[in-house]
Length: 218
Ligand code: SF4
Ligand code: SF4
Image (cartoon, rainbow, N blue to C red; front, side, top):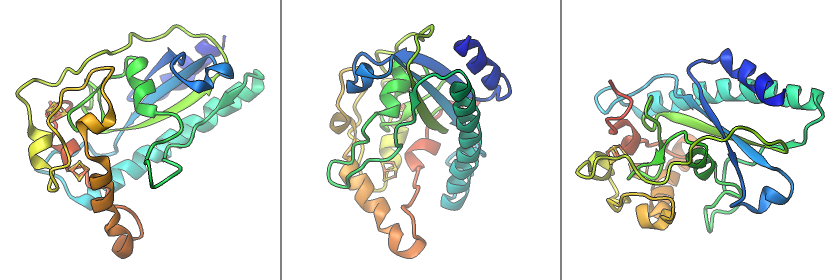
């Protein structure tokens, strides 16, 4: 019944990709049986030709609004059915290790939404990396998606690697056992984007390594 209600909510957002996974890999498994992962496409699907930082930021903010509406509807329904759930924080707690308590990306690949590209973000077939991810942990069992175990990036594609102005990407093909540090110097990426805080009051959304990706552009 809960799964059917979730399907009904997402039927109003046909552009959004979603799936379920068990979370046996996570310490949260003692409290929640599953994760629902979903990917909301950015408002404007930019390419390297149409990119500007401001438009990229706006695309993220537009997706966030849709995402929050969906989360509100999911929460309301789960409360009505008295089902235990938890929305993990999206960002890292600490600027030292830069790791969020529950990885949205790992849940998304386990739920079958896509793979991790050479740009260290989830690549969906429909939109490439131009999506905002969200996750809700739910204490119910669902029909789980097919876990994605390896990258579908073409071996010879280096568009994201080449476009990074700081050379933060290591040109490494992801698989389910890869570490983030194999793929990206995340501290360097974070540090360079944080310079923007002084002038704009937020990090540079950058995203050059996302808009350069050919997936989702045709
Ligand atoms: S977000 Fe920008 S700085 Fe970070 S890896 Fe991508 S292109 Fe490089
Ligand atoms: S630009 Fe190429 S290598 Fe980078 S994520 Fe997209 S398909 Fe993969």
